[in-house]
Image (tube, rainbow, N blue to C red):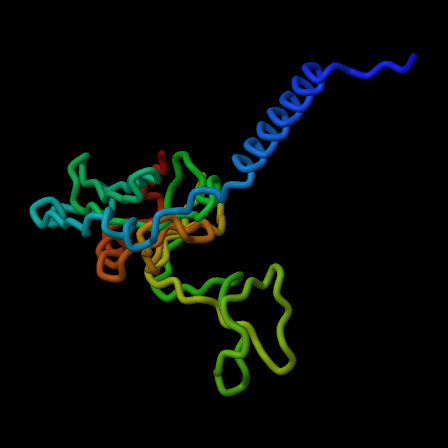
Length: 209
């Protein structure tokens, strides 16, 4: 004799199947939700206070008495004169964690008209940009062009020791209100020369969270 399941058992089986299907669809909907968007740059920019210069302290600044403190979490840099704040300025550091190293450094080189040997543009014989925003590490030069490095005015190269010529430094650059550089610490164009003129080779630089 052929066995036929009762209507009650069929009903329970169908109900269980529908519940499993609904749970599966719900989980799929949760995992397919788009990720949260980063806050607009304009909102982040508003959070950066303008540079603050304290003339009373800055007037006492000598290369032998200054040091630089960079706070990555706050996106600020301080020029300190005997532990008093002479300058408190917004910055823009490395766009990814670790691109701007943390620790204790010293100024190893000063160059007020420095250009990058990695980032810049490929230009033709007339100086016109043929390909902009390139990296010599990954971008080849179009035929008939030469590389022109991006300007890094008032460049202060830093390293672990005076013989450590790393690629990281402080210089004039665009500040969008959040970390955006390739590792260097960008400064406002009116603040960079104030710091540049008051430090020397060997000036301590601390970079922290």
